[in-house]
Length: 269
Length: 290
Image (cartoon, rainbow over all chains, first blue to last red):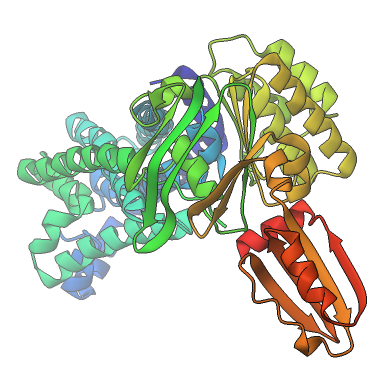
């Protein structure tokens, strides 16, 4: 790791981290502020839910959720946060080395006296720093939003911690998948398209898997590995699935270093 | 001592050719020209020097060390001016130059300001807002601020106005006098002729000639132009005749050899006009390119 690259990368992330973190905080506070009025009419809602086709309810992960409880409601909101966090992390992953290649700054950077592994490590740490800041903002917002909006209803702090603790691994999966996919490609044309594609693709897999009652997709998508309604429902992680996520991270990162070391940096003309 | 040693360097991009079996040496203190048309493999060669890309076979050594194995160490003493302009979004000129300088062991602050002053570069502007020529200047300053022992220039002057080109060439000459070796890649012959002592010509991925500029000129090529009424009868079936062109009663060709052979043929005919002259460097190269 080289500090000057890290510092430079952090400056490049500043705006994006700020935007994502603030947006997430706003979403969390806004949704939670509606909880008390929501909980009052919970019976009506639960009835309405019962009317809907069960497949749809499973798709949104609302099959085992009591929307009138603090964490039931929060778990539903957390799923939206996960989608945002996935897009952000995938975005940093896809852009990590490809943006420099697109803007030709890779020629500048790689002509400097640094090893490629040092470059990748510094960039990786900078991206992680950015994601961790967002992560912390989500933690703080979640706790304070729940405390200020729970209207005296109780909740299990341990389960909330479980949910929040899952963010770091969840982010890492999308970050590392983004990096390794971008390195498998000769050229990344649009970071945004790819990161939205990966995040929504994984989300849809998870939703469809639920709808079809098919377990195979569960293995692939981190949205299932850290399914908020399942965590709230059972009060624990599904360990084998979490291990799949961790394995995905390890394999992707290792492959990324290997691919980046061998990579031919083409001039774009 | 050779600063750059290239041995049978070959690079294929999949099946398409980059360069094939390129070999040459660049000696310490020289300004070495590397010339060829677009797509001949000039940038490929440079990118291999910097290990931006890896060779399919063969090797290149700089300062006596393998380009790949000792890449970071070698690059401590290389200044590279890329052909394309680049910029980090939202960055100011001064920030980029400081970032560039932060990679080197030396203190680069003073030289950075000197260079910016010579190239008339406003340090406070954002790079995104600069014109093409000014972005190019940023590239020049970042490549020279650490006073490298080897300067690699890839089409450095495109986008610079003539006055700036002049300043830039003077700068490179000064660096050369200070002891820096210069590898100058270009497709513009005039500037190579002005700057370089020796030149390698690359065409379709292969080196076709390595020569002192002086020798290249004095290779005794003559450009012959004969105009005659029935020029069809003028046949120059000699060894050393190349690039024969005929139009409107005029025959044009290059000739290398004993000029008497040519004059003997001409004297047998009634000619209207005759010119025999030194070809320009430009024409010599066109001759290689074809």
